[in-house]
Length: 231
Image (cartoon, rainbow, N blue to C red; front, side, top):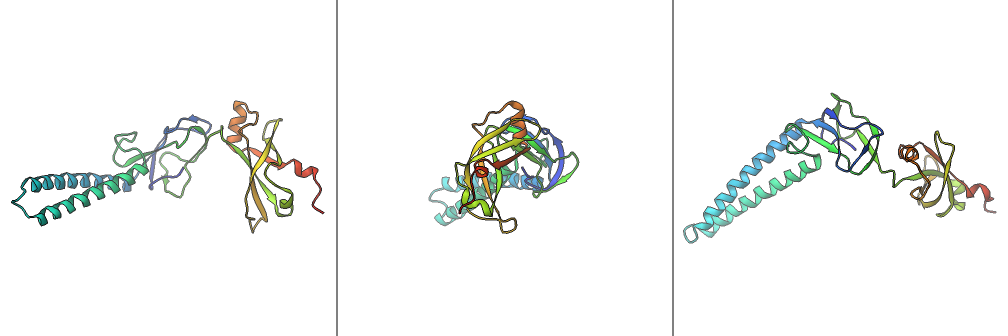
């Protein structure tokens, strides 16, 4: 989860390991850009109200004002409406406004896009952040999978359905799952391709859920060890 607009972190609402619900507040950021956009939104709302009043007045004078004047005022109304809609949509993507969880027009709050576990919290109060920085990561432990790199020399022996053994750091138990995806391209730098095995049906406890969600796992192919290379 990245900052939507550059600014200074004012409050942090969740820590690593916390379980959060969808739309739960994670971090509040004060941004001069957001304050300027909200000021423009307020001005656009005022212009739209004036344009709508002018149009209603012109239309009530049917037969007194020309159709050309009515069309001109209607174009002004439509332009003001489009400007307001664009600003409102842009600010909606940023996060809740002062009417939401933020305390001032300059502030916006990033919220959890899904229910899950916070696995990364890089936001610090007082720090300057920008859209290139990852501030939070939230993972849904009920929908997790293991990813592994398959060497180019092994690709001919690998296919969806192959058994995968997943080991979790700090635990003696391991999961056995099936490979359900194999990327069609090879990384030219590592000469490997990426495989993925779903762990949704694996046996898990609360501790395992969190460790898997935090990425503390290793995976390797089980069936591949039992099969000789193609002759």
